[in-house]
Every structure is written in C-alpha cells, then in structure tokens.
Amino acid sequence: MTEDEAGDLAGAIAERALAATGDPIDALLLLFQAASALCLSQLTPAEFALIAFDGACVTSTERLKEVLGVSQTRN
Image (tube, rainbow, N blue to C red; front, side):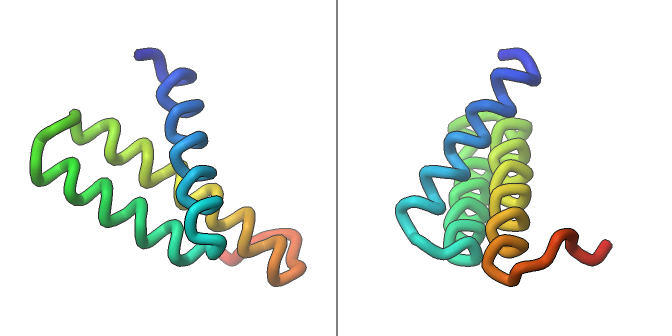
C-alpha cells in the first residue's frame, strides 16, 4: 500500500466514523479506541492504526474549525 492509498483509506475511515457518530470528538474517540485495539491485537500493522488516527485528527480538527467558526487552530 502506498502512502497515498493509506492516506485515502485513513480519510475514508475517519469520515465514516464522523458520519456514524455525528460528533467530531466522539468520532476521534471511536477511532482512537479502534486504533488502540488494532495495535494491541496485532490484527493489522501499527502503521495503519497510526495513519487512521492521524486521519481522524485531521477530520476532527477541520470539523471543529467549521463548528466553532474559526479559520485556524492553535498550535
């Protein structure tokens, strides 16, 4: 799997979690729990779990910016 493919997959997973929960924080928590479970169970490589978590962070950050009406987040 290339980095681009992994990124696309992570984005799709993050969007699905957001659609399922309807809340960016709940989606982030769901994906974090799933990534933790994947790492602990070794069902998939840890890199995949990390990519999924990164995708969730990006999606959640963008959604929070939209909800809060801000153009950028604090570093």
